[in-house]
Image (cartoon, rainbow, N blue to C red; front, side, top):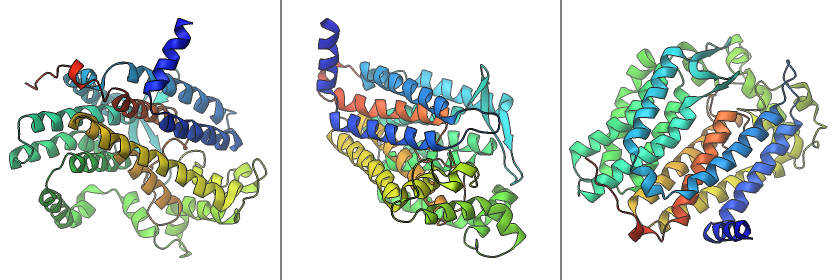
Length: 386
């Protein structure tokens, strides 16, 4: 009886609509993954995804049990662990290569499976950067040019390390999280204008010295997929096949487990980067719209929780999650619809990937934490940042 009362009390404080949206997304995601055939070794994508979702929900609930302000008080431990994890991966990580020129050293081995540390670091960044912003607000330094520059340096740390790992897709997501959190904190627009001006001037240098050859080819090919050239067939093959699968589904789709292109695995990495093509072929335009609508509902509710947060720390944590999910959604759909080049960004909560799915649910738990502890402001003594 006491356990039932505790569960009832927990969900009474939680944002139930937010949970409902998340549970619906999970069910839809698992349904799509279930329709994708096993890989050549017979490994079931569904079993791995189910385990990741289950662990993710457990982690999300655990994250809501401790006030987010208390979690943020340990920012130095979180930051140190994240930097160590990224540097360890850079030095001892596993590289993933393919004929497209990719050689990303962004995974580590964990007991017979692999884990992508940058996914967990995104959650750590949500906390540490939010704490940084809250500390500056407390001291009245959010308008100081020097401290704005230090905020940019904070964001550059994970961006530079993932670039050295050759995982620039993750670097773009970190950058978008930085933008969303800084904007949510009320940083003056002139600083954003200056940042984009510097980026614009730096584009020629980035093209020549930063981007790898395969990245340049992907950028060029993305807008010339119909050109019957060797380059388009090599670097644009995934997008060509994905676009064909999405179009073949029509309005209602060919049906679950009955779609020939999905069953034959004609779209490379369809269970992950191109899960949208799986939905497009099997459930058609309606199924694709349902995916987008669910993610938009999740984003809307995240913004609502951010707006109702009692402090800047909570609101910017929510904005970090919003920036992460929104940017991954935009870039992944852009890839699948031939609006953007392929950059190895998954569709949040829908794409297969144990570490990605697990860590996304942890981010969801942090946002739910902000909602559940929004009335506990007077019960927590924030420690001043040294």
